Amino acid sequence: MLRRDRPRHSLFAITNSPVRHLQSSLPFPALPAAGACNGKPPPAPLLAAAVHAQSEGVLIAARRWTTNGLRIRFANESFCAMTGYTYDELRERGHGFLHETKEDLSPLHRWQTSLKPGSILSGEGYLTRKDGARVYSSWNYSPVSDEGGRVTHIVATFRDLTEKRSLQEALVHSQRLDSVGRVAGGVAHDFNNLLSVIGGYCEIMASKRAVRRLVARELTEVYVASEKAAYLVGQLLAFSRRQPGGHRVVNLDKLIRGSSEILSRLMKPLYSLEFSLQAENANIRVDPAQIQQVLLNLVLNARDALMEGGVVTVASEVREACPGGSLRRNHAVLIVSDNGSGMSDEVRARIFEPFYTTKENGRGTGLGLTLVHSVIQQCGGFIQVTSAPGKGSTFEIFFPLANRRAKQENHYLPPLPATRGREHVLLIEEDVMVRAMVADIFRANGYTVVAVATTSEALEFLMRPLHKFELLIAQTRAKRTHTEEIFAQILVRSLPAIRILTTGNTDPALFANLNLAQQANLPKPFTLNSLLRAARHLLDVTSFTPAN
Image (cartoon, rainbow, N blue to C red; front, side):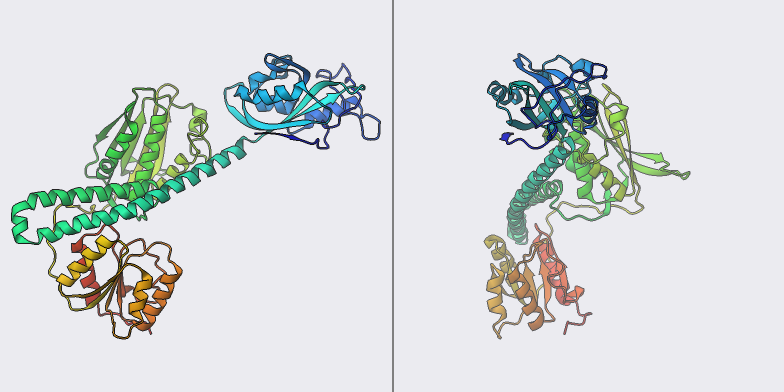
C-alpha cells in the first residue's frame, strides 16, 4: 500500500534547510540538522536528543541507491528496538535486508531517482527482525536538502502496527468464518428438510405390514443412514458455531468417536490421526458442540506443527488429579499429542493469551486456544500442556466425572405410534415435500389439517371465523420477522388456548404471552414418530390457564 502525500510539519519534513553535523563528541554519528522556522537552528545536542526520544523508529540514509537499498547512516534507539539490531549492526548496510518482500523496495527506488524537495513516500508492510519475527510497520520517507537545495539524505520514520494488524486479521478471519457459518447454516436447513422426508417416508413404509415384511432390513438401513447424515450436519453446525447447545451428560469416548471421521479427513493425505481410547465408562457433563470445537482446535493446531508424515494421537483415560487443592478425585482426561516441532517455554507460557500466535500470516488468529481454555473452565475442568522444541506437544484436558449415566442412542426404525385425534391443525412449512408428508400423516391419523407455506398465508385462514385451530405446527427461525410478530399477536389474542409445536431454532420470545405448557420445540430433522407423540402430548395437556 503506497501513496505520495504533501509533507507534514514535523522534525523531518522541513526541506531546503542548511545541513549541519552534530558535535563529534556525541555518542552517535553525524546527523543532518533541520533548520528552525525562525531561521535560527536548534542546538545540535538538543536535536540529537529529540531524535533519540522519538517513539517511532527513525532511519537516516544516504540518498544514493545501492544494490541492497539505501545505505543506513543513522538509526535511533526505537528503530533498533523494533528490529532487534544494534546500531553497529545496521550502520552502512543497505536497508533492503530489513524488508520481508523486495517488492516494497521498487516504489522507493523509483521515488528516489527523481527526488524533489518536499515530496514524501508512504507505505506499509512487513519488516523482519533479527530473531526472525515479523513486524508490520508503516513508513514515511522524506528528502533532506543542503543549503543549495540538493537532496543529500533521506530520512524515514517507522511505526510498529503489528498489534493493530493482528486485530484486523483476526476480525477479517472471524468475518470469513461467520460467512462460512451462514452458508453452512443455509445448506444444513435444506439438508435437514430432505433428511426429515427420507426418514419420515421410511417410517410410513415400515408401518405397512406387507412392505415391512419384504424390505424391513433395507428400510432400516436407509433410516439409519439418514440418522448418521443428520448427525454429520449437526457436527458441521457445531464446528461453525451455528448449533445451539447445552450441558448434558455424555460419554467421552463416544463423543470422540463421533468426531473421528471428520477429523481424519482434515489430516489426509500428508499426516495421520491415531486414537487410543481407554475411558469407556467415563461420563462427563459438557456441551458436546463446544467439546467438538475444542477437539477440532487442538487437532488442527497439532497438524500445523507437523512435518510431512507426522502423527497426531487422540487418547482418553481416567486419572486421579488434584486441581488446586488437597482433595484428589477421578477425572476423565482427553489427550491430544503430536510429534511435531514443539514449543519453547516462553511460547508455551503465552499460548492461551488472546491474539498470540506463532503461525504464518493468514494461518491463525491467536484465538483458538483462548477459546479452548474458556470452554474447559466453563466445564469445571483444567488443562496441562507439556512441550519442548523438536519433541512435540501434549495437551491434557481434565473433566470432572459425572455421577449420572449418558443417554443411550438406539439406531432402529421405530413403528409409528397410534396417536389418533380429531383436532384441527394449522401447519406452516415452506418445504413442499416436508409439508405434504406431515399433512398426510396427520390426516391419516384423523386430524383435520390446513397446510400453508408462509405465515402470510396462515394469517388469511386465521382471520376467517370458521377456522378454529387447536394445534399450530410451524417452522420458525432464530430471528423472527415482522409478519411472524403480527401473526403471533393475532394468534394469541384469537386462540388463547392453542398449542404450538415449533420445528426449528425458534425465538423464545415469539409466543411469550402463552403458557409454557402450551408450547414445545422439535428441531429438524425430526422423525414422524417424535412429531406425532409431541403433538399428542401437547394436545392432551390440560393443567394450564390460557392467557386472557
